[in-house]
Length: 108
Figure 1 (cartoon, one colour):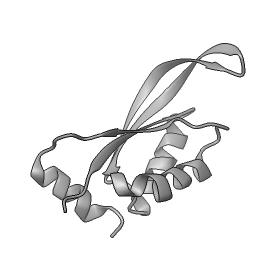
Figure 2 (figure 1 turned 60 degrees about the vertical axis):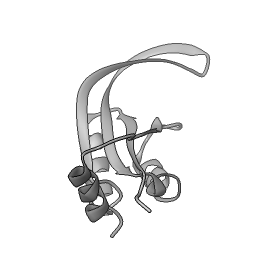
Figure 3 (figure 1 turned 180 degrees about the vertical axis):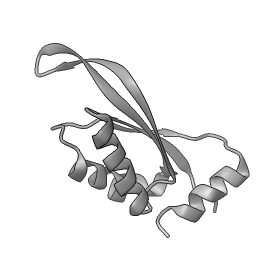
C-alpha cells in the first residue's frame, strides 16, 4: 500500500528557532523538507485577547503515519509556545518521484 503524505504547518516566533526545529526534524528523519516563510502576520485570539504577531511559517513535508506519534511530540519538545500550531493538510496528489523521495528520506 502506498503511503499517504501531508504538509504540516507550524508557526515559530523567530527564524532561528524555525531553522533549529527544521534541522532537528530533518536529522531525526521525520520530515523530507521544510520551507520557511517569513515574516507572516498572525492574527489570533489567545486567552481572551486579540493578538497580532510576526512569525515564521514552516511548511513541512512528510508521511501521514509519522504525524501523531512522532512528529507532533518532536515539535512540541522544541517549541516554546504553550499551544503550538501543528496542523497537517493532506497531499492529495504529487509527482511520483517526489513522493518516492519523501518515502526514501523519512523515518528510515
